[in-house]
Length: 360
View (tube, rainbow, N blue to C red):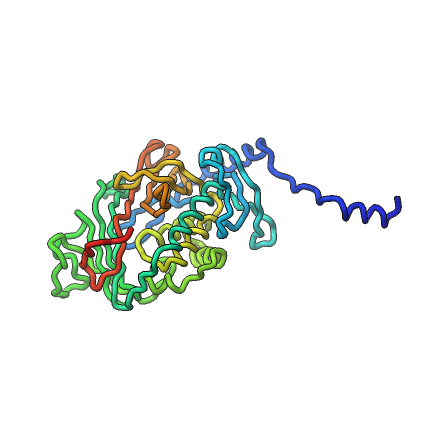
């Protein structure tokens, strides 16, 4: 057979299969990664608007199940969640910034759930608030913190209400049970305005320079709706923060979803972007601060798993939970050190207004 015949035969044959990692190789890589995490001291970060407490930074890369990159078109495995978690996987690759090839390690079940949540968010009406209005979010919360002696404690579940200026030009308001007295609603010494309710509150300064870390509705409305572009922006603007870039991206998206309202297309893009973060896994059952059960996606770091909880049928965002999964600074595995539940979101005309009906 001459060279021409061999070349023609090679052209007709299918290309060789791309090698996949064996189960033994998966276990070896996981063991190596876990040993590195155990040898590194946990980091803590403080997030959110005045009161979101210190929690461990979240690290990516613990889940070695793999899926095809993308996820924004809704194509995901239809296998049951438990079956997907037990090892039914699809391998995919994505280019790294340095030109090498890395693996997107979000499991199929997590991508499927985030895609469903994105579809739900995309179908909601756009509130289109006026520039002088306020985003209102009503929640139940409970978080870990440290006392004067440096001891960790967890708050009781309590109500938290926040009003945020749509364009950031006006002062917002934070009310949280047991946190602020009647006289603490004044933003500056000498401000004579009383607290807007007998329960007291804290005036929040205007947001003069909105950003990924301090967003307004108008800022969110200007974010890219392409998940890849959005995730690239989040990585770029949080570079050097937190424990790892993947951890910080997941935490940042969680912050953007927790206490804000965004146009439907942006909310959907945030969920689809989260599906592209390595280390995101699925949890079959989780409970928010109000006792509602749901399915969740999670990210783990330093022995703590942070979960975003969704209603199982509608895939509406319910809240969050932080659970200890490895013994350490935050106690024994199974200890819940953070809890939220979104009771409602709405647009109001002024801070302190409580709408009769809110949309969670």
